[in-house]
Length: 202
Image 1 (tube, rainbow, N blue to C red):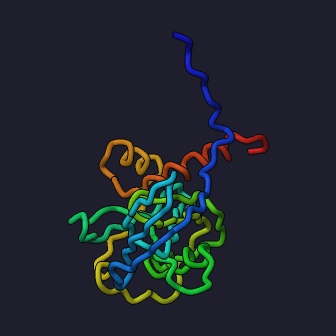
Image 2 (cartoon, helix red, strand yellow):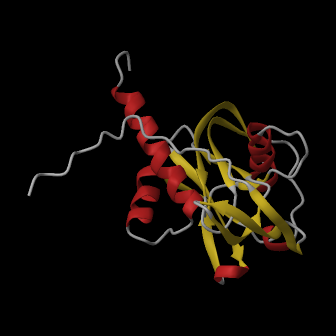
């Protein structure tokens, strides 16, 4: 048997597809997100898909001068865990760019500001079940803000921890830290910083 051709991944990119939506129904209108049921014309057939309509989110991988990443722990009811995460929040302010939302979340959840911001990566969290996209940013040059932000609900007893980036990566690979946004964020940040350290002039 001939060997299958090996494709190069260098040019791969997710492909937008504009299908005809023949019917769309709001099944449930929630406080944060909705559930929709769409009928789509696909390959000559009508198919029905229900999904969570999500406003999207911004998240922050904040790394201090000692190479530690800020992790936060809070209760998440659907999984019945207090999981470790990176600061993140919904894109729920009309017209607010994702980076500004990330700045806001870092201030609201950790009482921090950053002098250096750069896009890190954007991800679809659960493409078979919702349309959420999360934009992650790398924040450095951290400083404490003057006024602590009032917190309520699950954020009222939020825990902050500064963890060496390599240890956070180890926690992801060992399966101890399972939050998807945290996993993508710390792995991407570690690789970004590794490449920067290996580039000429550094």
